[in-house]
Image (cartoon, rainbow, N blue to C red; front, side, top):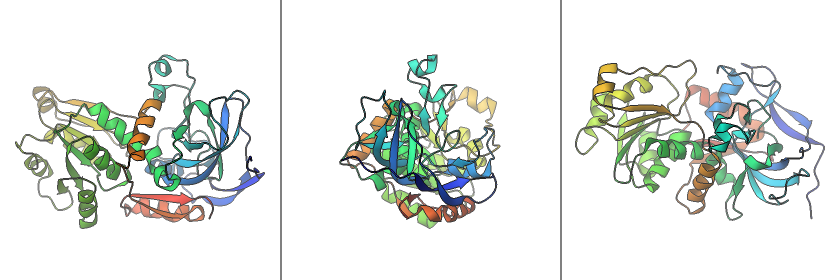
Length: 352
């Protein structure tokens, strides 16, 4: 039997950038012909959501805005053109809410680069509400044997770091350094890297993050807050002292992006994923040339990457460390995030 859909719902709304979010009731929208309506049960909280609240990225948000792009829930309505999604299916609201499906990028499986991409919780309303809209072609297809609470952080953080590891070209048995390893993205990058057979150097600060990353599969830890020479310490953590084969940058400030090119090994790859506001990538030209290193950006995964990342989770290889709070408490999560005081990930329960 189809679920009765209310006309109003609770949501966290950004009414003005730079100001606290407002917990209030808003209307429940109806899906268009190619869309589905998802009853969001849980939604992970990503650092991107904080950027949307602060308005500090060079990308305009819609206002008022419902943030969130890691929403896991149940399909409760679908548009007239949707035939491959059933009422009752588990579905995820991802960062890529929809694309044109016709441009060069969409046709070559680079749909995140589509100029007409709709971004959940940024250019369209996202998952910090009880009922959210998404294009049927772009929802994450979540198997019924998956726990919706636990899988929600996979829908951005997991997919994003998995894509970054693929982009790095690193192979089983090789070494990857994960910068920001104790955060929401980094904690999952450690697990995907372990599942892919990599030797992991976790780079972060503090004993709590050292202990957590060790449990998640990191064989080495470099504490940038106490290290006298991060570059030397990272190189020393590799068996031959040449540095890691790849560096995955999920840090939220600029400095680590400048250091990576110095400690990655010759022919190594530096993958920038984190998006610190106003930051720049700088690397020594001489070293970069004679070491023949690659520096590249990696954006969110495509639909195939998403399905693969979810399958790692379904098999029990990925368990995102998270804490759950009510949707009404979202602002307190942002406050902690602003202070850099979060290890792992927060998930909001939309029922409270």
